[in-house]
Amino acid sequence: MRIAFHSFEGRYSDNPRALYEALVRDGAAAEHEVVWLADPRHGTGFPEDVATVPWGTPEGRAALEAADLLVANTHTDCVWDKRPEAVYLQTWHGTPLKRIHWDVLWAPEGRLERLQGDVDRWDLLVSPSPAATPLLRGAFHFEGEVLETGYPRNDVLVGREAGAVRARVRRELGLADGTTAVLYTPTWRDDAVFEAGGRAPSLELDVDRFRAGLGADVVLLLRLHYMLTGALGDLSGDRVLDVSLHPEVAELYLAADVLVTDYSSTMFDFGVTGKPQAFFVYDLEDYADRLRGFYFELEPIAPGPLVRTTGELVRALGDLDGLHARYAERRRAFHERFCGLEDGGATRRVLDRALALARERGAR
Picture 1 (cartoon, rainbow, N blue to C red):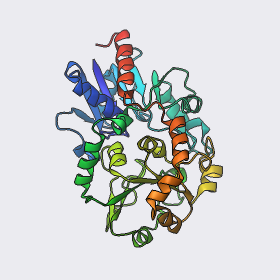
Picture 2 (tube, rainbow, N blue to C red; picture 1 turned 30 degrees about the horizontal axis):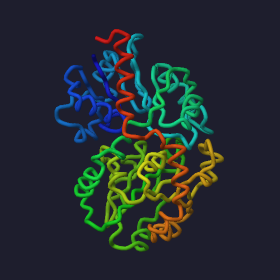
Picture 3 (tube, rainbow, N blue to C red; picture 1 turned 135 degrees about the vertical axis):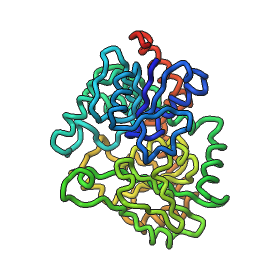
């Protein structure tokens, strides 16, 4: 069987990576002709024995068109033709809080119509929870088969190796024992990325105040959305590590002690860990009412405090034990609603169904 993997336009990451590595562990990868679409900027993240073709090139198009099974985690937004018998598994890359696809309040002219051409090729769509399923179906106008399984990428968060992964990643990042790692994962703003002449992307967090307000034993791990990676330059500095190019965000969840985000779906994945969260929502009303919109209000369901300024954030992070205790019931309810399927078995459930469907269609 010919299998092509596509993650975030050329990274070795996320749900496709979890599914591929399961094939390797099973000893089944050698039975298939496997290729990854790769961006040269992320080339070092791929294992040496993984076959790759450059994203967005004629070689990449040929690989997509030859595949019996395509495994992706976002729109495969390039020119290619899908064979009728091929299977396109769309794992997507997050539980929607912010509105997506046809539900957004604003998008560049023609963008959604173009992306819908990709959606119309999907055969299987992965959903992380019963709460997410109707949102994904509605936003994408998808009437095909939904695999309500949890996310393969999150299996590691509850697996037996979670402690070892945490220790390894912290060691690789140079985080000493006793260091508190704050993972910051802001999402992107549509107008800053797409609107010609609009505001430029920026990091609203005051890093200097963050460093000054928290002790020398606190390190900020900055993880920008893939749409923004590289757009702000290298932001690493004293007690700030730019981990935007780290291949796998799930490893960063394990390495971190607390998550700070805004409206990113990382809140749902991090919720699997049971660790504290805080929400830096400096533009809450504008984002909710004009730019993107939400499927549900954030404040009533957030498993942590909503803060508007860096100063408020620093105060919230200054007492992690207290923060953890105050939001224990919120975290429990959040986990029950959004993370209940994350039991470590999502990879197997998704992989078995995708391979079975490809075989039913006569994969070579």
